[in-house]
Length: 153
Image (tube, rainbow, N blue to C red; front, side):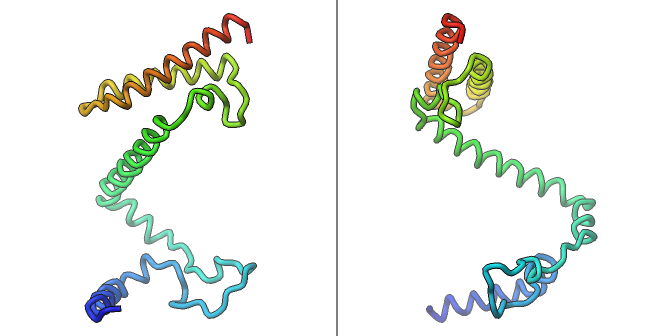
């Protein structure tokens, strides 16, 4: 490891050391022995509710929480967008267990897809590829609904 990297690692560790008492979870710097069946909580600091309740009551919590929540929502949304593009027609019309959807679950999925389509259409930056994917899924599930209604399944 280069001297440069070691220098900045040491600076970072020295800077963070005073905060360890608040944010660290381990009782000791290093655990000397590890057993596969040991209780991990024995190696951890107790949860300090007073410290966190002060943070929650502070004016800094709500902006932090809102920011973190929005970050998670954006991350989850990007994952769902990728997954929508990768699912095939057969998987779309089946339950997670692999069975064909019944009329009720198919109707619920149709409503969820309609809602997703509405959200996508109302976005400021419309993603035409995502719109086409959602519309295609809506058509597939709509056809499946018609089939289930016609055959009373």
